[in-house]
Image (cartoon, rainbow, N blue to C red; front, side):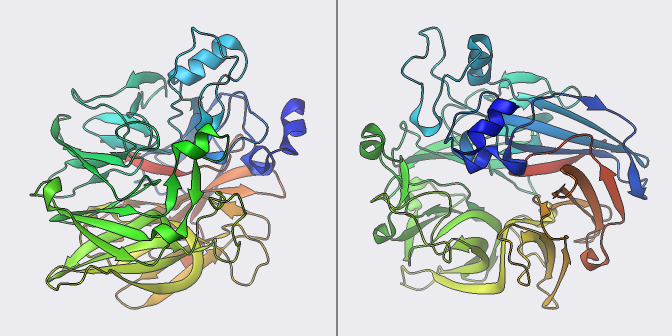
Length: 468
C-alpha cells in the first residue's frame, strides 16, 4: 500500500477513495444502525475498477473489476468482495506485475505467453436468464457465481462474439435483454452490432451497422417499439492511438447523431437525427408519446475525464451533467432532435423502477451535487417525481460521497420499495450502505449498514432478490 500512496501523486484515481483495496474478505454480522426491513432479502452487487497492479497515470475506466456484495436477510447483513478474474487479471497475477496499459493494450515488455485479452469486467453487474453477469463495454459478459463471487469465464449465450454494452436493457414485458456493442469490427472502428437474448438465455438476433464515426457509446435507449443509439463526439481514433495520444478525445465539430431503429425492423431502417454536440454516459429512461420518442439522459456540454482532440483540457464548467430530455419527431420530416434541461441540479447515475423500463415512468433517482456546497463530488441522493413536479434530496455531510442509488421493489406500484446506496464517509475513511424508503428520500435512511472495508468509487450495481 505504501507503493500505492507513492503512485497517488501521478494519478488522482489512486488516491482517496479511488485507491484500490487489496483484501478479499468475507464478513457476517455487520453492524446495523436503525432497522433493516425484514422483507428486504437479497444481495446488492456493485462493480467498479480496482486495479490489481496499479500503473501511474492510469485512467479510472481501465482498472480491474471488483465485485462487492452486501447480502441482506431478515434484518441481518454480510459482506463479500472478489476481483473478477479475467484473462488479464490471471496473466498479471501470474507475472506479478502489470502487463497492460489501459486503452493502449499490452505493455511492450509483456511476455509472449500473456493473453492479448485486456478485458476488465469492471462497469456493471446484473442478473439475467439465471446468470449473474459482470459487464464492461469492450468484451463479452463475464459470469460470476452469485454465492461465492467466483469467476466462471465469459458467457456467450451460444452466439455472442466481440464487445457487449455495460448497459443492456431488459424488457419488462418479454424478459428479453437487448444489447449492442461498439467497435464491433475492431478497436476504434465505427461498426456497431446489436441483438437480444431471451429469458431462456438464447441469442435471438444479431445485426451490424456502421455509425457516422467511431465513438464511445456507453449507453443506449429502448422503448416498446424502438431502439436509439447515440453517436456523440467523444471519438475514437486509431491514428491518435498509434501516435501515443489519447485514443478517445472530444471533437465537438463532428456533431451529435442519434440512430432510431424500429425493434421489429432491421438496421436498414435506422433513421438518423442530428443535434448540437453534447455527451451522455447514462440514460434514465425512454418512452413513446404518440408520434414522438422521449428520452431522459444525464447530458454534459462536454465529457469529463477526456481531453480535446488537440490535447487541450476541457472546460470544467461544461463537464457537469444535468437531467436532459431528448425528443424525436417520428411523423414529421425533421432530422433534428430536440433537447431541453428538465432539472438544474448537477448529477449522474440515474435510475428508475426497472419495471417501467421503456415505458413512461413517474419516479426517478440519481446521485447529485449539493448546490450549496463547494465540493465537486456527488454528495446527495435525489428523488424526482415527474407526476407532481416535486423533487426531494438527502444531502451527505461535507466530504462524503454517494454511489449510484439502486431501486428495488416491495409492492406492485411504481416506486413502492427501497433505494440502496453505498456511500463514502471521508472523515472515518470507511463505507456504509444506506437504505431509504424510495418515495421518502428526504427523511434519510431507515437503516445504515457499516461495511468492514472501503468500497472504492465505482460505477454500477443491482439488487438481486433471494427468490431470483
